[in-house]
Image 1 (cartoon, rainbow, N blue to C red):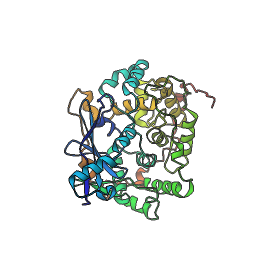
Image 2 (cartoon, rainbow, N blue to C red):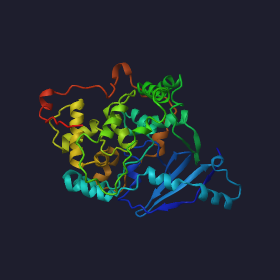
Image 3 (cartoon, rainbow, N blue to C red):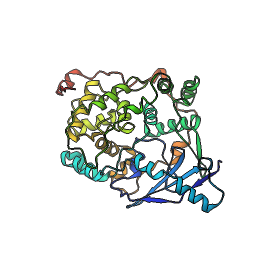
Image 4 (spheres, rainbow, N blue to C red):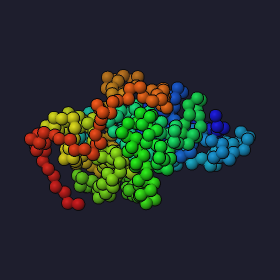
Length: 399
């Protein structure tokens, strides 16, 4: 194991209604956080391992550094002083966890305009949209196509093990940083990922990495970021139901990449680029729209471009500029992993490290027969019974 040094535990005044890490870190936003046996959440970010735990009033964090990155002396006192002097983890966490907006104010606004949100929100407070690295979000959500959270986490874990940099260990658990576009653009990457069980996603990942590295100008992905700062309270300004121009441009640009359809593009816009009006819609969200928001005239489990846009526009019109945040609360509330909360159980389900890690590196023994079960890219327009869809009024907007 590499030598490492660990800071003392520090705390930030964050109450559970403003951030619940047990929900936020396992509701399908980020796929690299691991819950360790000591009841802490840990992840390698920006060349260090960050560990988090929480009580009702504070978020606690500690940082584990490879000693080479800190250039520390051998004495304990000097080590602690050097960590205190050089550790920028607090600033990193404040940004990554997106702690500026008042989540309570957001929830109050959404509850005032949406009875369904008001009914479900009390059990799922503290669901906050992370500010993730755009590149990591892009590749993570390419892996999400026709997938569940555990399998996505396994795939992302394999990417990090085979192509990322080892940062260090906590106990026997290794932590790797997310691989760069260069690391994923090699000639053998696609074939290797297929061996690791990525299926058709292997080609998407390899080709997208090459596009980012060799075709797009440097900084292209970062240039799609929303530059408007988040408000502490929900925005009172009206936006078009189809979202701001910058969001639409970012969304359209992402569609140029391999393996990126409307849903993946919206996931990246929301969780990697800061466009809070992005509402990712998959069959899971379609079910919510059908059950709770009068879209029950759509009888199939698949989406056309028209129905995708109609549902997203409806939620943006209902919830406002931060519609993507509200959507994520209801998405979490509908996940099976949190079903015990809806039964008023205090024993919330937890993704253990073993659930994600035990199959990493190994080839899936349940790999699907692609010739029999090939899944189309989510760019494909799947037919929905036209006579049903026509009941939804088509909206026209001026760009």
